[in-house]
Image (cartoon, rainbow, N blue to C red; front, side):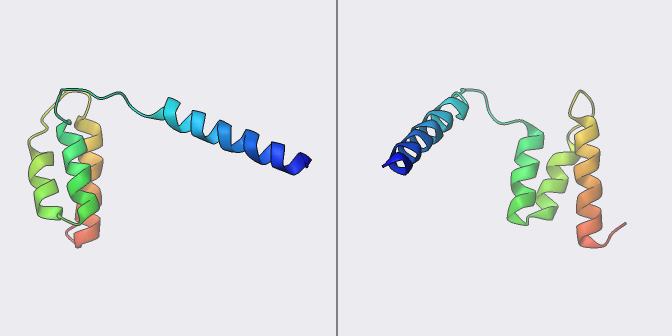
Length: 78
């Protein structure tokens, strides 16, 4: 009997957490880094590298350089 109430409590907590964690919808397009990461996840290394080359400065520059290095390691061009 007690295990059912614990399961229900855990299920309710899981559902509440899932709704609380969801990101709000935004009208702005994804960043170049996010697009490059999505292309990288799909295995489109050339497309991801082209997008990463457009990132010249700002706060995403370091992450873009790391992603480009990861592409070079994955493709054997290091």
